[in-house]
Amino acid sequence: MRGEDSTPRGLLSVTAPIMFGRLHILPVAEAVRRAHPALGVRLTFVDRVTHLVEEGFDLAVRIGDMADSSLVAWRAGETRRVVVASPDYIARNGEPKTPADLRHHDIVSFEGVGATDEWRFGPQGRTSVKVRPMLSVNSAEAALDAIERGHGVGRLLSYQVRERVEGGRLALLLPGFAPEAVPVSLVYQASRRSSPNIQAFLGAAKSYFAQAQIRA
Image (cartoon, rainbow, N blue to C red; front, side):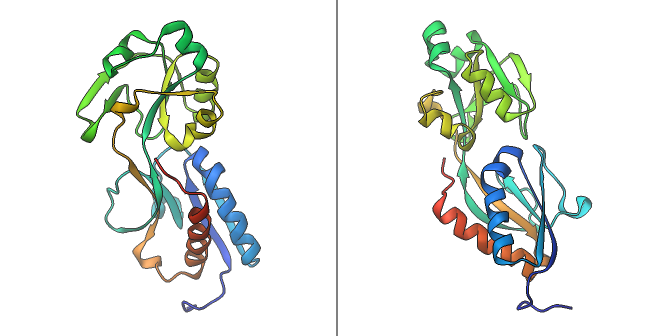
C-alpha cells in the first residue's frame, strides 16, 4: 500500500456537469498533468448526478446541497439559478416584473440536473410559477444560444450565463426574486481521503478556484 506521501500515479477519474467541467475542471486537470506527469486524468462530463462507487469515479463535482453525508466535500464556490433573455427579446416582448409574468413569455428550457417546469424564487423557494417551455434542450450551450437569438426566456445557473451577461448578449431578469445560492463542491469517498491522486487534484483545484472564483 502506498502512503500519504507517495507520488501521484496511475489514473484519476473525475466527473462534472458538462459546461462546468469544460470551463473549470479541464484547467485543473491540465495543471495536475503538468505537475504530476505519472498521473493520468480521465474526465467525464455529463449533466446528471453520477454515483462515485457504482460508476468508478474518484472525484465528482456536485452543485447543490449534499444529500449523501458519506462523501467528503470541498467547497469550490457557489452559484444560483438566474433568469435571462436577450435584449432583442425584451425589446419585442417586454420585461417580466414578477415571476407570475413568466406565464406570458416564451420559455426556453435546459433539461439539466434538477430541471423542472416549476420555477422557484426568493428565500427558500417560497414563490413558484409553473412555466410551459416552447423549446426544451438537454444542452446548456444550446439553450443559451437559443435564448441569445431571441427565442425566449431561460433559467440557468449564474456561472453558465456570466460571460454572455457581462458581454451584453443576455440580460438578467427578476434580480429581486433570485433564489438563494447553492454550493459548488468537489466530493469524494471518505475512505479515499489519504489518496495521493485525490490530494493532488484537490491541491490544484484550490489554487485554481482561488483565482477563478465561482460566485453567485
